[in-house]
Image (cartoon, rainbow, N blue to C red; front, side):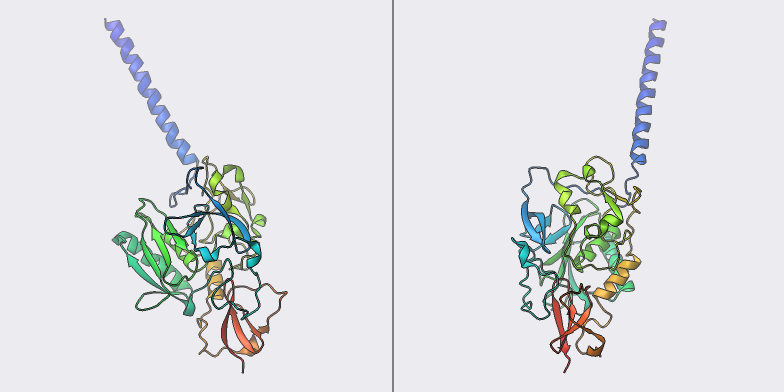
Length: 346
């Protein structure tokens, strides 16, 4: 009997050793993946989700109609309204003529920036911890750029910031200024890393990896991307660029594992290295691009803006958000998808 008991003890000890080794192996395996600690790997809906084809900024995209009537780009955090999409590519003009029937934003793919550099907001149902992260995020933008966030009083254009109810560090946001319909919805564990990014969408910014020049700076590993998320990595050839060069450190840049289906990176730098983890800050180029798009005077017609300093509009020129031109005796400023009248040049 003693020999039998010793054999059983030895057997059980070996089992415990094997289980312990397996557990340690799993720990080291998860660490070796080097997945971002401050961002959650994003997932999209199951393959049966019905996506429809639309055009956004002249490019064909797959979108899903959400319960609130907005459209998500292949299930991403960017939400679009129906009038920002089109059924045909030819309704979008990359370089429209200043003042040519765009006052009601009738162009497909229309994105508007906030007037006077100011984003009025209403907060609904956020926890104290998420509110603190939100304030930190707003402070990051306002301390480094000309943009301001103010609590709404009676403004007709404002964004509602509320909880999505999701127990996650996540968020979704509409793109640009959309009257009273704009929103940001945050998970119950949302941090400034995510919220700063969502505020970027509210300001009108697209994801950095969608730039047409991205292939000179990063590698997209399509074989590692979730099937329903491939459209998240489309290149927008007609979008107005926020910054003069690609910015791998932008708050609008996806992480290396975003939308991964197998734990392998979906994006690396041009040399195959993992991207820097996104931090709770905006990059130097985010700052420069924002101050170009939202100039220090806020586009206020009452400021001393000289028509003599602006060049005449040209149909052959590619303009950036915030550029100013003269056309038929008037001064205009470039918005994301239209020109905004500033003043008459007299």
